[in-house]
Length: 513
Image (tube, rainbow, N blue to C red; front, side, top):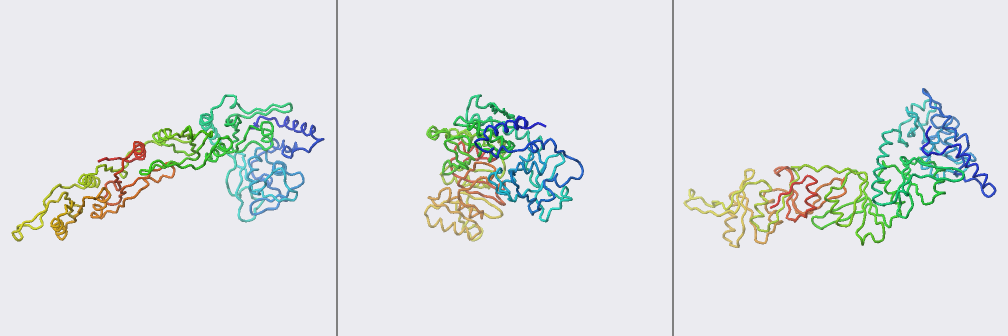
């Protein structure tokens, strides 16, 4: 059976025995390398049988204590976790490697090779899958029944990726990461060669597809051990023979955790996690990044700062270009670019740039899709009633939901003011504007008369948590019945090109006046 690390077990055993004999006069064998021949051969001897299985097939022995969380094993002299799992529970070396870290965490064991005699270790129940692989099962609440444990084990978290599709996904992800990493840390071909160690007593090589090598800033190398499949004793050999090699045992399937481990081993000058930066006050663009990287102490001065994201949604190209001009280079190894959203009816932004009050009134009414008449004469008294005819000029007149509205400017004449108040007694809704009324005040008066709720504030225009950027902008955010498209946004702010591009990316239509 193919062993992921090309190290012949028999030769390795001979090498370890030779090493032990050479150092026996000075020190005892390092317990990390202590493994008997029966344990090494157990992988070949262990067979998967169909039909009902014994208790030993499920990872516990008849004389073990059965606890609420699984089997409780009592440590004997000379035990360590690998020896226990391979010798007593008939697991192969690969199977033991898959489960040993979980057992270590479950029992708060610091050093798996240094156990106390008499120490009790909880070994969660194990079931064998149809393809022969093993999986931990969550322990049932009641006492385990050893005689039917093959059918009663509750499926839990799989601690080993068994499917070839998942393995291919990991290899694709690590390949993508490598392409980005080589841009982040350019290095020669010599640094990226597959790991190979040669000594007088043993040779060790690793499959570069399963264990890719990445360069570090200080001349070291990072070995990616996907899913922690390198046995501890082999890790010890690598770290002892080449201290410049740092082993990262994370899966590409957990992209942020993987990147954090890689960056922690890369030797950068500074790495900041969950970095946030703001551009502008109003509109305010907020960009977040999983990691901000300064390669050297001069990175900030030289505007050579890298941003590394682990998410699946890429920043839009206009934002990437904007950040590059600001001195930030964005790397997103696992992301795919989201397609440009088509305009969404409820995402209309009416930008009113004019400061002339009559034009502001017209722009607001057009945004609300309200037709109006300009300079219309409105009767205060009609001649047919008492022979007296009195009318006033309404700068803007419109009807809405059976109501009549007038918008006019107050010129300081108290008589004119009184006449418009008289119109209110006749059922008109009158908006009287004063000379100092700006965009905000004019809009508030019109919306108030129309009984439309809307306050001037700085609003967050979208709330997609999957996006690593957001936009906040001041204006009136209107929604509900009677609003064109169900919602719209009215603002008088100037919009920079990058703001316009991001609004368009998110399905907004901008109508400027």
